[in-house]
Length: 120
Image (cartoon, rainbow, N blue to C red; front, side):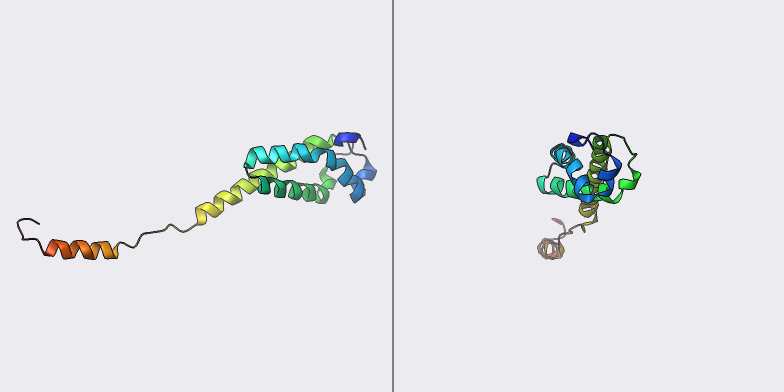
């Protein structure tokens, strides 16, 4: 394992503490990436946590001896995109608020009925 998460050896991929130590130097950069994509601090923090968990779960897809940084930042970017999609879906799914115009229509009809036929 190299410092600053540059590469990971086989042992660090199988030991959770060693894996976390490999990711730790990358977390500030991961947060900056997530924040740049989301513009919401709390959500960026959540995305980085989710990305770290996903990296641990998907560590078998990491090519042994490859650079850890681009692999992990790609996970962060993908999680950020999914968070943006989820946020958009929630906004889109909100029901449209239709104002209740029935009182206005009733008032309008009442006012028009007071007018003579020529004025209407």
